[in-house]
Image 1 (cartoon, rainbow, N blue to C red):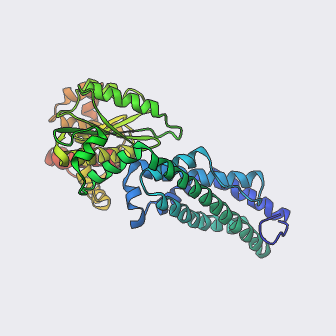
Image 2: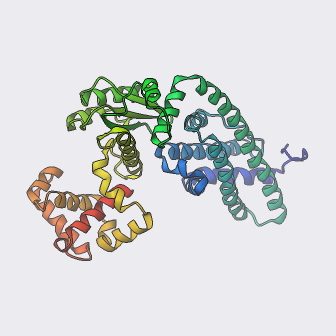
Image 3: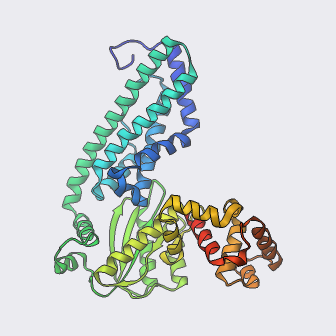
Length: 407
């Protein structure tokens, strides 16, 4: 029986629902892209969209819900789909509660429902053009999808309430709250902040973000990477804040970045990624270094190369050039022309060559390739560029950095 008025669902409509759900599963990435675009757009979700960890949590939640509803309707077409309280959803819930944006998360599910329903309706009109079949198909699945989202939102809201109660009792909650106040420039007692956090706001600060992208993030691995980074920086102290189930915010009381070998050691665990700001001093330095680490993380998440370690120094030019995506796209298209869409090894050769001040031999050594290969790639790049490389190397270098980190 379906959920509305106890009417039986016809065998034909059950088969149409199953077919549609199978198509949804096979094209789930396209559905997820449309849902993500809607749920991460608009002023109400600006805070979430700007934070790579929160945005990724929303994406995981959207995809998990999509797969849960579609898979259930392949198994039992038209039957009620139970609330989705999977581990993925519970992790998303914890992340949103810990960051104080739980209401935004629940609203995102409603937005996602609207987008999914629009795509489902389009699919229904492809599956059949029989008016009676369409009427029953749309009626049954509208109720199914609505009931599923209602049940999921209700279950997660209850879980969020419980999580909030737990967090209020924990020291991590107070630490996160105090750090948030400092980051937002709120008038808060410095002595209280330093006492609770065990971290002096005067002096040097080096901020880092450590995160895992897997749904089953391992906090122990994040902590181990934080320890390696701390030791590499030559200090025995660190301020660590659990920003989400898969993300740590870190501040080290140092005036300089760790040496390259220490950074490589911190990022040696392929499951943990690290983003670093620049060292800075005082309260404003505490904030600025963190902003830089968050920006480095944002660009690292978008980059096609998926680096395990990224510093703000590496992405600063791209952050400036790609600050406004439409302007960045116009800039790179104008400066690079067809080179913007060329194979990555060709673009990377030009980028490294310009960074080494036009030294082809050093470029070959850096890229572990033959000098003649470098020269051939540079020749090909000149054919693709609107203007010869030597005419405007600065703009070409900036555009390549933007393309590299824009993803």
